[in-house]
Length: 236
Length: 240
Ligand SMILES: Nc1ncnc2c1ncn2[C@@H]1O[C@H](COP(=O)(O)OP(=O)(O)O)[C@@H](O)[C@H]1O
Ligand SMILES: [Mg+2]
Image: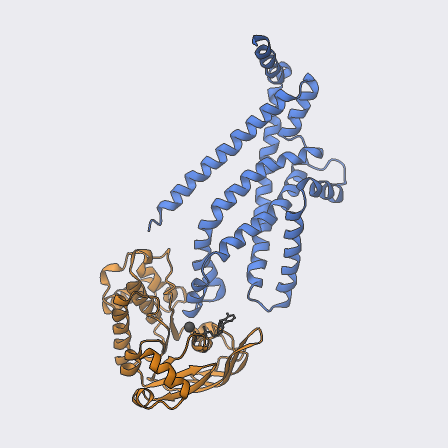
């Protein structure tokens, strides 16, 4: 029994200290964080654009909008209906065929394109959850569609959107681990690298899991902090 | 003031309004009654183009609303609307609900709009609720505020779609009272309602809409004492 515990301890020691291996995790963590950050930005940008198209198409006869809406639906359906790892292999080989492309860009673009589809549905659902009467009340007073959207609908929708968006980002941080399949040295990849050096893969992956867990727990407590802060404004 | 010519509305092939011809003069109080699903709301909502008619014309103060080139947002500033479900803005205070549109549309400065809001709140008997949120108020109070919000734009006509149908019975009176005062002040009003007492006392003309047409219209006295249409007779015998 003692022997077993000692072996496990030794395994973790080997996975962390010799050859300053902790630096490998740190550089992997840095990469994961950077990719997540930029992927979130790309995801939000794509998500907002798609959501605007989807929502305006709801009551528009404009041909351009309706064509864009078709494309948006296809994009969202394909991205949400296929595994991210497959998307990454396709996007990576399609776009980033040139040598020495920046791995952060590769990862962020792949994850951002994926996240955008989910973000757009979160935003759209948030807007559509606001009763139609709010839009009608605004319009009946003579406000334009965009004035009503901006000053009446969106401020209410944001309350539904932000928590769901927070969840999406937690998912995204975890999902970035999939990009280790392409040449990106994120946390997951670095754990694998350490494992290949020590010939003992479990401890480095457990360490990676712990780091992911700390990140997601940190993010979710940050979220509930903001939710509480926002909720206090409108006690009814 | 409002003219409809052969006004029609279909929803995916289902005809809801089958040609309505109406002349509504300034100062009239037109009350619209009829069975549920007969097209009363649709008629009212066509008048300010919340529903876009599929046929016919609507002319308001000389402007053809059904012309796609008409700036409908400008027109709606002169047509107030009150909904069955109040539709107040929940994240805004009562005062902000009233001042939001006039300020955003640059009809008034915030200061002028605030003063106007206080006046209106005084008039509807809720001067102490200016800083409350709609969610804290009763249905009757919310509906009175919805009326004040529409009045803040100084409309030429007010459209009411069953303004008391979502209220508990004890709150119906306070809302009808505000509407009655508004009528006495000379406002042009078009009111869809099931309140026959209100129709009789306040209406200058009553329309019976049935299956998408105006099946009978008359002065309140004739309408209630001498209905000619068979379906109107049946309808009145049920609701009176
Ligand atoms: N947005 C809509 N889409 C489809 N059908 C509708 C819509 N609005 C109303 N209708 C239909 O039109 C008919 C008349 O509705 P409405 O004008 O609301 O009646 P009322 O107000 O007299 O009860 C009903 O059969 C209703 O189902
Ligand atoms: Mg109705």
